[in-house]
Each structure stands twice: as C-alpha cells, then as structure tokens.
Image 1 (cartoon, helix red, strand yellow):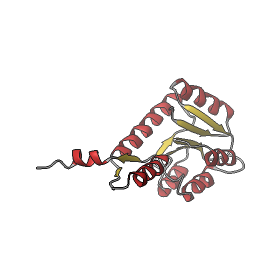
Image 2 (image 1 turned 135 degrees about the vertical axis):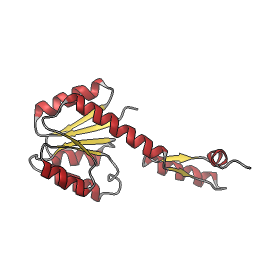
Image 3 (image 1 turned 30 degrees about the vertical axis):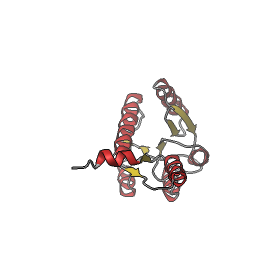
Image 4 (image 1 turned 30 degrees about the horizontal axis):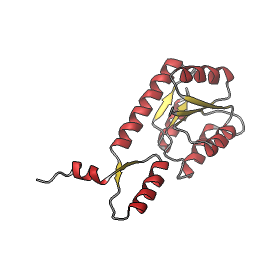
Length: 167
C-alpha cells in the first residue's frame, strides 16, 4: 500500500509541483490550501507524513502542529515544516519538530527529506516491537488487530523463542 502524504501550503504552484514529484515516486498525496483544510483531512484519513508551510490563511502551521500533537491518535505522524525563517525553525524545534525544508521548496530536497523521514520511521518501528504472549488466542488476535491499526509492529510467540534462544 503506498504511503499517504499531506502537503499543506497556500501557494498553489508549490503544492502542484510537490504533488507531481511525490506521485511520480508512488506516494498517494493529499493537498490543503490552509491549516483548517489540512486539519480536516488529517482527522478524516490515515496519513504517513505531513509536510506543511508555517504561514497560511485560516489556520497557520503552528496551530495545525499543536492540534495534531494534542490528539494521541495523530501525535506520532511525522511532520516536516517548510520555512525559511530561523525564528520559526527555532520555535518548532522547541516544540519537538526535527524535520525542516527551506523555502522556496525544491522538489529534489523534498524527495530526499521524505525518503529520510520514512527510513527513520521504519527503523524506529523495527526497533520497537510489541510481543504478545498469552494462552487465549482470541484475545491475542484482538490485541494484534488493535496494535496494528495504530501502526505498531507486533511480534508473535515464535519471535520470543528466536529472540531468546535456549542455552
């Protein structure tokens, strides 16, 4: 299943160029012209990455970021901030943002950043597996479904045997 990316920016040419480049790489791309449109999409559809400008009408990137982080079901979606302002960059870093792209948005830098973020996310998930052990297979199955729906990696009992071999 292709990864889903949201691009939120009020500059139509930036959004169009980003969409074309990302779709050429096989990503599914949603777009928004302001933070409010972005927020509505974020609440309605599962996303793997959000790329947002800071200064937008209706709702800016700062308020959008805060809304996302307030919601535990959305808080782990990686976010890339588009800004050319050191003040904005510093402010977002204090909020915990790690990924930035400079303005004007360069499509090659965007592709490299997206690849980098997804590589980091994949490595992080591989290093954080949840192992479910229990005698009740129905409960184990239900727990696996819940955890996987939240994009967590779930290990099986056989994984524990491989991880902790008998001496």
